[in-house]
Image 1: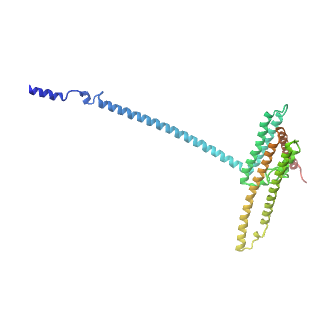
Image 2: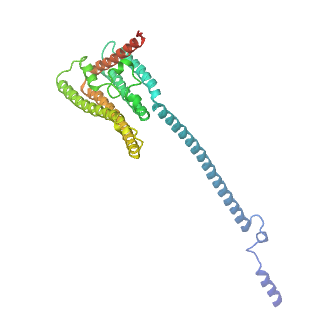
Image 3: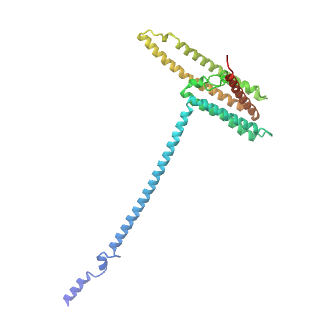
Length: 306
């Protein structure tokens, strides 16, 4: 009996809690469940990683498209800048500008048939005035490449050249033109007097500087510095004079910018002083003046000189 009791006790050591299926890792056992969970976790991780990689690939594709688009836009801008800076092309651009300006003036004239409604007319006037600033910007870019073509009016008609001042119209001439076409009243009189005086003083000062520079360049070009004596001192003087001339010609570009700024100041100054109806009259006066110059040029060019 004692021996049997020992056998029973020994058998109890191996009695369940652990089943045979669990011991051998059969389906449903803790080991298999853990493996299944691990496989599921790995699968989820892989799916999450693949989803993340797919998103990254889509972002890369989109970024490449954006970069390509930006490069195309930059290329277009660069090409447009090259076009704007071409003095020969500026001739065409100015002619195109004038044709467009003419169309806008015609549109304004048509809108004035009937009742004058300021809320309708003012935006058209503002639009025409902004067009002047557009041609100034195009002109500035063209001058960066060839200031002389712009400064001395190769883009102008013959009659226009006769009225040219430092690469464009003379500001005081515009003031005089407009003053002859409009009547001003009350506070406008003093404001126009001040504007005319201010513009005239700046115009005279710039004219003096520009004339002196031209005379200085002419004197340098015809001076003794360019007499070829064949010695080292003469060669050094020649080199210094050429370098000085380059600097003086560069200053001409600054004078052209100053002149255009004064022209823009004249336009904006009149815009501030005049009423909408007076601005309309002023724009018509400027347009008709430009048309007269164009017509006169055509007449001059068609006239055969014997």
